[in-house]
Image 1 (cartoon, rainbow, N blue to C red):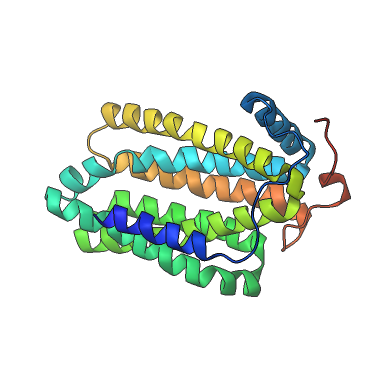
Image 2: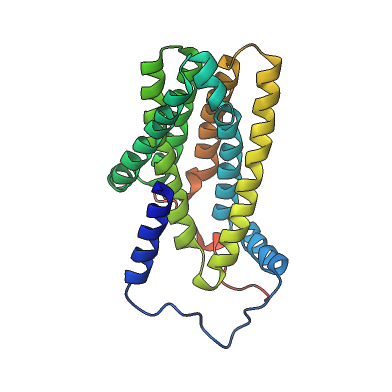
Length: 245
């Protein structure tokens, strides 16, 4: 029921948006999906900042999933909570995500996009590793809630950079390619997490491994993105506005 109410609210908000949003006629609109996807991948490959960013976000999505795919086992077996408590535990991260959405603009204004993105990856990794090292439900819940804050901040930074760096005619294709790459890494992370959980007792090693890898990726991200400045602004060599259609 809550999902239905949420979709209804979304529809009402979309209808209320002012302006005309009809597609522009006269340009090709029936190209094969794979052709559009290739265009998006080609654009990303030619943009240095976008290429580095998609590699970072794709890798971090996979590493996140190493732990998150085992969240049910973590809550039920490691923390020894019941099934009813699992829903509440999961909702805590959503609250953290909401806080992250509210705080992200201010954090970006203070420290810049690069620091928020790399610092967010670092903070998320520390939270996940800490979850693996504690069996206290209260502390674990607090860490999972805090985890939602940097994750949302990282998502906001990456989405903002993507939308500002890509020209409007290519935005849909780049976004489709971006999601294909990033979401495609999630099953790999889930598989790796499942194999690790099977090979080790409990979920401690799974969460600690995921957290440590996130910290390592935060350091790699800083090295890859430092040339673009605090605002993650693509240089002249990182932006191109034309591709074969």
